[in-house]
Length: 369
Image (tube, rainbow, N blue to C red; front, side, top):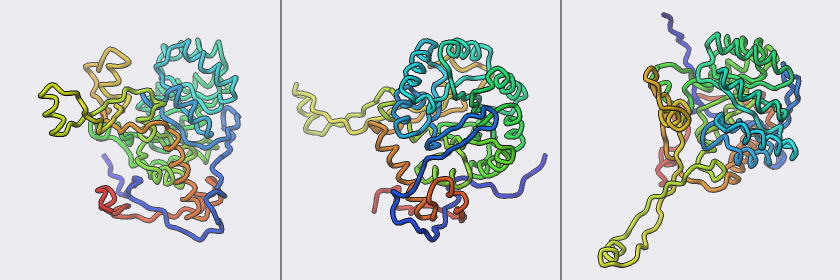
């Protein structure tokens, strides 16, 4: 047993220090980035924000909406073969295939399904996604997949420490997913006591990946647009988002409505009148993909040897995703002007973090301003 005594940091532990800027308007900030991937040799150009392959987030509808802005989506693992073939054919014809990644796990069944889709339509980006990327079996799977798909860009994870980042890149991954237990709908830290503060994980893992010519995507812990900024400032190449993209029409989840009746309406109903109750709240369920709920939706339920490592949350129904995207991108542009960065690429070079006891006024969350 050993204890690492250095304090590790999450997004809520820091703020960015403002610096002198020569920019006169947020409109001058460039958010598109270009990457050449180490193993696939493919070139990527876009805004490096990625929708997670979670229910209600990594959907066909979300992928089409985000691609219009230059963002990427990792699709759900649970679409059937013919739906995937149809969708990839559609986005290839429309030129949006660069903004979508096919997702799979590390089983033989996952591989067989992928081959059925790939045999019908080319796939450029792959997300090999497991909860625990530390097993030798997973690293071997990534290597085997790379050998079989030399020209595909491979995103693989999740891990949270530099040593395994290096192993996965050397095994063939182009982008490694960084984040253990940091997701808003994840309960891994509660059930297992395992995890790593997300900001420090990004800083340390980015350093290891970039030393080998690889890339990382910070996956988890994003609660607001400011957290996206901090992840990029910490040198994440991509930022993956689940919760902030949940609750939108494009996610396809059932909208749950709560009703409220006034005393007058209640009396009318008791007297045989019409129901004039009004909708006061609208929600959509959002849950971790290691939760009991996800196992019931996509499998035969939670196995007796497993604990549920995901939570079921109700997020407010937000309508179309356009306003959320604009809020994220607007926050990024504004942060760059505060930091004096002309584009997203310059942000880490201009970034200085300061540790804080709280990052917002206590009154902000209470709606008293």
